[in-house]
Length: 585
Image (cartoon, rainbow, N blue to C red; front, side, top):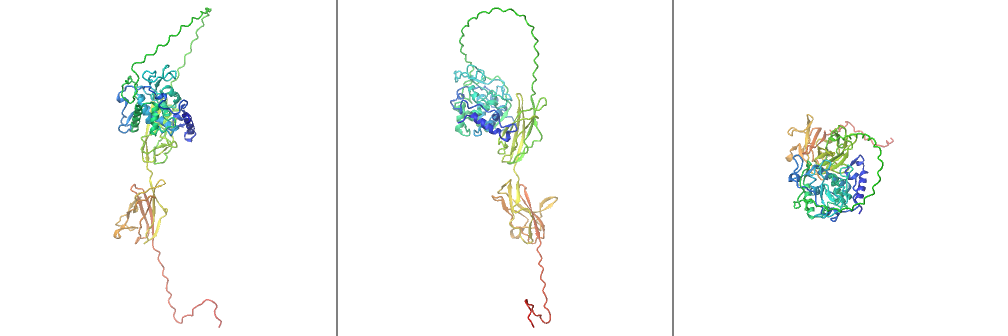
């Protein structure tokens, strides 16, 4: 089995070679910043270091903060769970990223959210910022064997600020040795820091998908979660939160940092592991070093003349970069198309800084949400979310959307952020059904008959796009034009072609048989007995008011000219003339 990082890199190269990504577009940060995973373990198992009893960093939060309710107007179904907006964005973007590199994994973002809920309550209480960082560091208990696993320091304190023992750290609670193999850049800032929820969520996604796992397989999903924490209760609760979020979730404002205590070791679920102990472990007393030998005292040098201290130049103040200030539509963004068709040009958005200048190179996340169309996606990537960079004018252009197969609506959510600001636009999109089209099978020329002759065998075809539509109901009626509109004739005064009713009654309107599987129906005989020569019009119309006008030309019967009779000649009958040579006399 080849290491995951090679697979990600190879997949990334294939993705980057497509025309769709040529214009500085990536489906996710993993495409341009592949993980280094694979050097240590190609497929984590329940015996992996990450799965050991490492505690967690959840805080004892009030219920309203731990499990917030989405605010009114959030377009969330009843009973939906609330997730801090930045955390929700991180989970969803990580799933998009992993989906681009490892499409066979089928990683649901709700799985990442379930793990994030149990490990740190989505970084709630730590001051989650819009760029994914936190005001306060998130660190689990010291892994010194005192109530938890014993793991000696592996990162020299770089990630967990502990140079003697390791600690799980960040919103997804990676231990340093695991992060070394699976670190990733989830927000394209050039850093790989599990203290940032964007990076941590992407790293967790890659870790869970390692070894070519298919997480749509319940057994492999179970094994993946056990490799993150080898506890059956942990698995059950992660799956519980995953399913809760799959039934509905919405972003809520990032909660501020607070002075919340850690959960007691006897605290309630969602995690069975004890929390950070309230009494810190007394560190062992370091060994007293031996007293060094006193060096020989050097001879006192001659005191040099004290030089004049030069004046230190004033260090220029570094200008503070302008903050992101505005995100707006660039031009007219129309989000309406027929089912299965491609929308017009890709939507364009403009990002501006506080000084009014364009935000060049700004990452803009564009996602299809609340979709009832059966799958409106970005074409040709076939994804519901993309990350686009702004050009030198601050313009971010999304790839074209392809409408889903069903009529419905969706929301196009556009987000841009920097370290202090998150700006969001929400645009309503609509997909309409393709119109039904009626055509005559034998062409468009007028139907011509001689008065007294029936119109027979005219067929009509109902289609949507190029597909025939069965079960279409048509009504045929003789019509005439009044004030530019086709209206049915008055049956008490009509003199045109008619259908035969009961007892010889003339019908000027008739419901046709519904179209068959081939989309076709046949017009019943239309009689013209005693109909005056002229041009008539028959309208075929559906309940949805789609119609077709059939022009009928009734011609008069041709008059037969009688052959005149020659009267017999008077007197002697002439001899008959015969052919050939006359006889000699």
